[in-house]
Length: 308
Picture 1 (tube, rainbow, N blue to C red):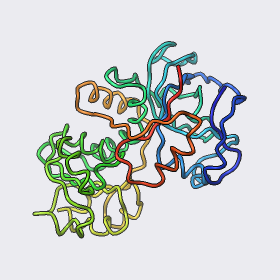
Picture 2 (cartoon, rainbow, N blue to C red):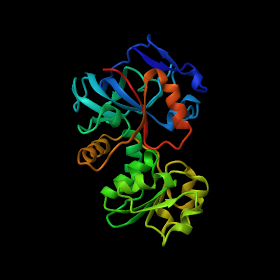
Picture 3 (cartoon, helix red, strand yellow):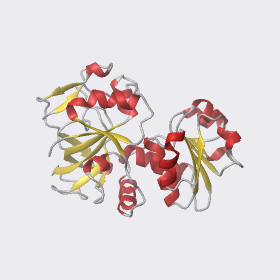
């Protein structure tokens, strides 16, 4: 099959487009998906550089990518939720790192997939799983956000942040976001009630009063200021810095969850989630796409697309 792979850890130069990768195996509870689009996330750069080598077994050659949207080609004998021809999307984080989504085919455990939202293109759907579930699990599980609460989302115009503000609005929260001035209108259009300028000093000094919950997507000084932003430090969640635990808050590392993907698809089809695609690259320009993501300050999602 055709795909991008690496044989060693390193910079973008280790990524190469190949036409001779073996077709991936199909296990009993696995489906093989013909990839139509794959999103690029900061964790892909971390994997390429070897930053997760201590957390997962790695097997070279490695095809990068965890987010996917495509069509089921073959379903294993234990699979009950999908059949050949189904349009699916998912967060294909397996128990090892080898068969990623930046290729024509990817083996995906049933737990990692859901039916693709019918209202989204393949490129849009590929942008949802990792970032969308990170936001969903942080808001509904770690922070238990409920209707009427005031929720502060940092880096609200970024990949995870923009999903977080939309999900929080759908939950009935009063949402406050931090962003650069150029993104304030973008967030207001998404239902954010108040937007703070992240460069205008500590967020705690810009709030009229402490909020009920804080979602940190920045770390550093912003996270250190978080106890002054919130009524109860137990309702601080961070997806970037485990030291949030020392403040009394929760660290969130997203996990594959079929039911959460189904709920995000429902929200998208109900008009509660939109997916701005910042840039779409062809597969052979994956290294360029990763460089764009690693530079930060991208509004929306970066994806790579494959021809049907």
